[in-house]
Image 1 (cartoon, rainbow, N blue to C red):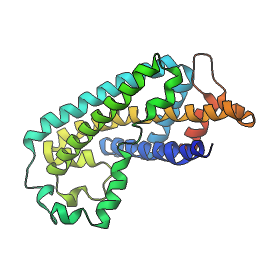
Image 2 (cartoon, rainbow, N blue to C red; image 1 turned 180 degrees about the horizontal axis):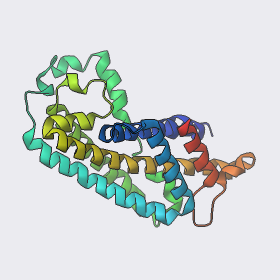
Image 3 (cartoon, rainbow, N blue to C red; image 1 turned 180 degrees about the vertical axis):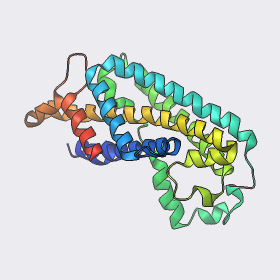
Length: 248
């Protein structure tokens, strides 16, 4: 029970807000007149409505955007890797051995860990998966390995493409790195790519998180309203609760 409420507040609603803000920041980099908070909020509402409307439509949407995101990341790594300057970020600062023992590295690992949150998210939708005994282990292992490979590869290109001073305190890291690597036009393309990729990240949180609170509603009669669903749709109240907290 307590784990479910930790998931609601810390595990999903807060990261949902953070990713939505990042989406808005990348959109703002493309069109300076865009309000990042408004853009992120509209996306949360739109994907929440899709999730509660029809599960099959949500699944198709997530599959399409996830495949598209993977192809875009691979494309950026393939195009960017041969062009990076190896004298950039990797050559700056103290040695790797000395860095491993610094407080900054420890804090950095906290942020890095966010890249791997969701490695177990397929478990939350096990009740709606065909043959979960076969599918879930494959999803957990293959998904985690794939995310690790993509994350390390794309961040290696980011770090090698731009100096640390240009990357520091920036939310739209991909935009800055692509600008140094590919110029203004390439930066706009990369920014659009990342903004598109963040759509599926937000969608995944909206799909998986509410299934936890829905289970709480089934287990605890007083919270039974959390288990309310539309026919062929997702959990309505649970989705509204999480998305509402994310918007706040």
